[in-house]
Length: 210
Image 1 (cartoon, one colour):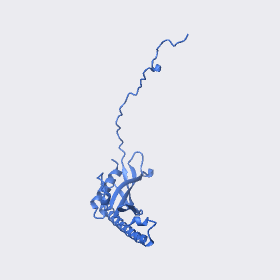
Image 2 (cartoon, one colour; image 1 turned 135 degrees about the horizontal axis):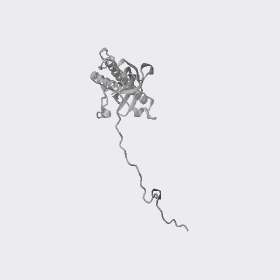
Image 3 (tube, one colour; image 1 turned 45 degrees about the vertical axis):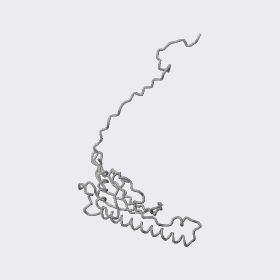
Image 4 (cartoon, helix red, strand yellow; image 1 turned 120 degrees about the vertical axis):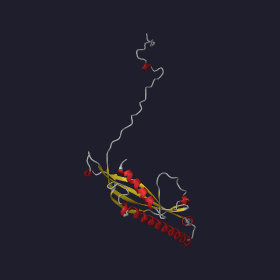
């Protein structure tokens, strides 16, 4: 298995071990939770992209791989805002102002929750004792967590949801071991069409001529 996959698993494991009240880590295919229970910030790890610089490798040796992992952080708060009033053209300005204020309070709460989750995640990943991601020294090099960014809070019925992300960059060495293919299965695809004169080589008969 290539190192970039091992590293992805290591990131998940470290996040899960360090998680507290401010976030939880999704590992494996667990049963999804109902939307109204989705209130604890969650982080999901993706291998997003990678490069193999030619200047840092050769055909005969291990290849330098510079993978990028995206950590997607999602928070949700119980939506008690009056969205219907905001979308109601018949509502008065005072009613809409009150509804907007409540929505903004929820958005600020979601924003604070996201910041708390990112704070914890950054401290867990960038801790000095985790620079090697608990892997053999030299497996994960130049680890860096960067580029935190958030979207806009979205109304999802019972929940107000805010999603954002950050990225982890590093470098590793990938060893090319090759792979042994599995022989395919051969099938007879000959088609025999009944009464097809083209398959009757050497056949003779009366063609009806004079």
